[in-house]
Image (cartoon, rainbow, N blue to C red; front, side, top):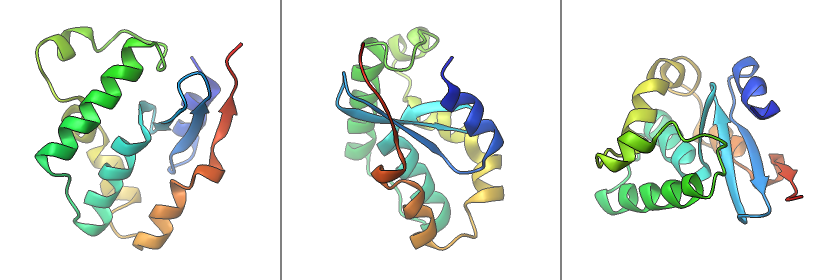
Length: 127
């Protein structure tokens, strides 16, 4: 388990991690690992009412699967859900619903967007 997972349980804001070996950002938020785009879409739905289109959700799923199968999240807990065609984003959003309602819903969009600034990310170098 990465330290970012633990930090994400202590701070209501997302914890960003840049994975140089994948050239991608992932986010740990309230103990849940996801892609940067998934987390940002969840936040924008919650604070601004801006929803992902079906095409965006498909792109989110493809990016998640690419990183997932490359072991970017250090887990294989999603195998059955992905094989069954479940959209990971929808499951993650349900798990995050209470957290989003409590910590994101009434925030200003500019503040929430700042949480996803790439400059906040820690960089994990591939060894």
